[in-house]
Length: 297
Image 1: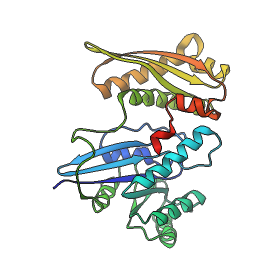
Image 2: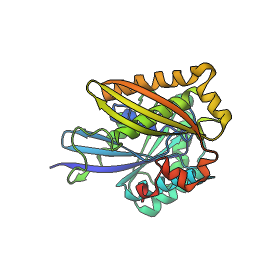
Image 3: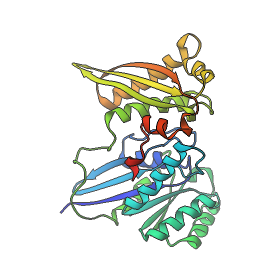
Image 4: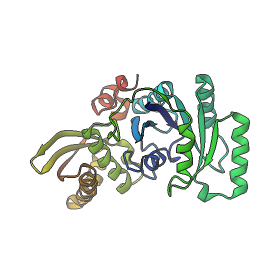
């Protein structure tokens, strides 16, 4: 008899949600960077072991929405919790529970869903601080399990999976046994490019960028991809392109290497940079760039 369950992974920005999911899967399906709000869409990571299929929902970091893009991201979090069978709340060990964590705990209580608390980044604190965090969160909610981890190096991640197994139920799988994510190949390519923008550019610029795949065509033994990078200012465009196109070439080189590793085929990547001012404040632009509300209802 097959078993399955959906797990919503939630927490504040830059707490390690995507890193944890990638380690749980043993494969990189969600982009990661040191910058907050890296994840914009809900991303399903699928792990099939024997007769069991785990579906982990990586969600945007919870924050106060200041534009239409932010509103979309927060709707994605609410939708993920509402459609899950269990919740994995990630918080930083040694950091007092803030309004974000308390808000998420209240949402978990409201759903009545089983929950796992993952106290991440234990490599940055001592045992006493970890114990204090466990006690603080225990006073806020009776989690079904608490697992201190360092998602960066995979420490104790297997224990998270052990706890998640307890919430599997008998039922048909939603995905094929060899599925790794629910993301279309175009979306994966778009996210790989955006990750390089986040990693290679200054703090301000990447949050105002979006990547749209305009052409995605496999031709014999090569995958041809044409992508448009949208930013909000002409000055940002100049930075993304760089002197004599050097910055854009570097972004493209790193993105192409990751794409070839993921898709298992040679990639020809053609990048263009365009400007649309204040696109994050426009519901139409947010939707046109792939962040559609109907996808998170």
